[in-house]
Image (cartoon, rainbow, N blue to C red; front, side, top):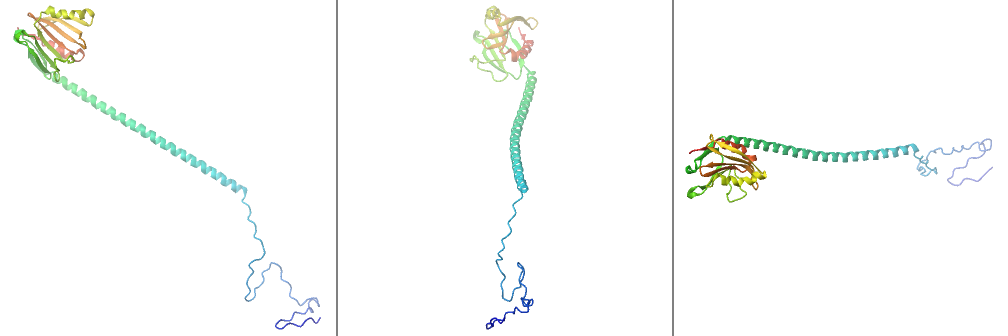
Length: 277
């Protein structure tokens, strides 16, 4: 076959003759598909091969379940931690309250113990001071009645017995209260009245009859002073002890306004009671 002459600048096509005995034996074989071809000078590689990217395989189901379990565990741990924190705060607050209460109780107990010790010391000191005695004497023309009383007590002489009046003196551990105040109370009342013994004794008789007073005989200074001892409610609001004795034509009264507080001191005073004439 003659074919067409080659165009100017074009290389002649190979003749089919001689290729496989006239069937293209002289032609180069076709390259295999998808095989990279050598690039000639100045030739750019193809940017789109026309091949679709392989699809991403789905996440395995076991991995998804594992993530869910981890999330649940994390939530449970957070809840437990939150509950633990709440309980820790509540415990601390409760402990703080209990500690404060214990401290307050301890301080109160210490203060009470200190006060009790101070009171005991003061009482012991007062008892020692009361052992120091001070002599006291009534007017000479009133029988010269004398006795000893605690030196720490205060004395107030309200009436001195002059001008045919009564003699009255009042004793108290601290300040002697006003004799015009019905609420005043005294450790000791010392009175010598210008009245007969029977007249004075009769004022106590109704209370003895009612049972609010008990009456017993009294004697001091080897029988030089005799009379009656009354114990109980001497008057409204006064539960004490009174000794009523005859002194010539007059009457002696020794009284304490509180049996509970002063009975011991009162008895010691009666043990020192003497008559001078």
